[in-house]
Image 1: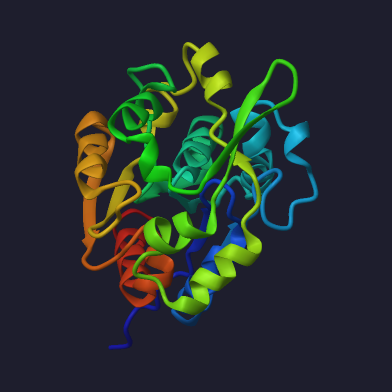
Image 2: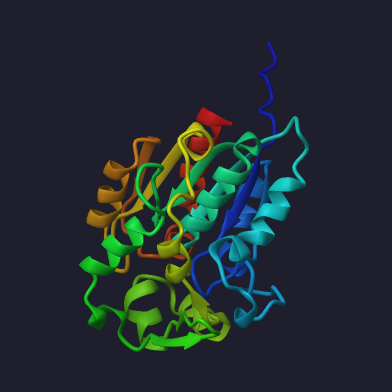
Amino acid sequence: MEAIKEQPKHFVAVHGVGHGAWVYYKLKPRIEAAGHRFTPVDLAGAGRNEKKLEEIRTMVDYTRPLLEVLASIPENEKVILIGHSGGGMAAAVGLEKYPNKVSVGVFLNAIMPDAKNRPSYVFEEYTARTPIEKWLDTKFFPYGDPPIMALLCGPEFISNSLYNRSPKEDQALGKLLVRPGSLFMEDLLQTEKLFTEQRFGSVPQAYVIASDDITITADFQRWMIQNNPCVKEVKEIKGADHMPMFTKPDELCQCLLEIAKTYA
């Protein structure tokens, strides 16, 4: 008897602060070789997106390119939505705005909010647990009026924190391509409710832990998982730094394919 061929899935992925769709250059061909679609998205003012940071004032503004992709998904289709690092907040906005377009939300060693606390809660907790010295040579600066705090990852922070186990070529790529970005804390602090049980909470969610991440530590990743009851599945990639798509692309691909097989 002939085996039933698996239907192609569609993965949509967003990046962390200051990065871009380029971070998925190793993962995209692996997912596609398995017979699926992979759409990495440049968020506003990031990667090849032409907007300037000065034009972006809110988390929803920042997430707009992802929302446009989700809006374009046909009504009878759903995607696997991946958010990495600070891009977990953008993915969460996507889940809230288009829950009917997403089969599962995957938080890849990402900042992950919940539906019960204010949207800034997890960022505030992360900031409280992260000494300023850990940011190394990252530059912080205000822009706009009223001012919003921006950051630019420094080369030492890239090599020794974000990409500490990544190949030297990927460290060089990051140093060439990172742009200034923001966590939009000012906007999130003013927003009482952004994520709801009825929308954000209605989509199954999975979390992928990067065990050797020293930027968002495995302990803090586990704290976020405990804080969000919407997480249905947890996977862990041993030996992955903050950039598992660089350090462990094969293992990451396998994790995502397994999650897609269960929920999509």
